[in-house]
Length: 117
Image (cartoon, rainbow, N blue to C red; front, side, top):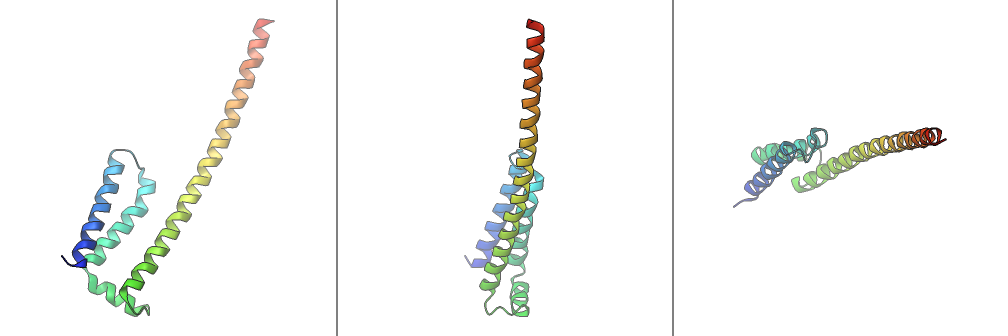
């Protein structure tokens, strides 16, 4: 089995796994888009590997493997940055929710004090 078939099988497996995670609601589509794009790129370049060689040569890479590693590194850095942004947004929402819950608990205790008096 040559490397193109292995790359194609791995890319298709990742694509189907992400789709299954979205289908079972274990992963939201917002987070799945990046992984679907990466696996689609893997499928594309596994099928049209001559295009990969041409892109690598055009961008000045000596070996297509260096181009692949560089591209994957850039993609994963971008995905990490994107996930960090989502995490920060979630932390802000959690802080606001905690503040609202604390205010509701305070108001509930005040109402209980008024009723007991």
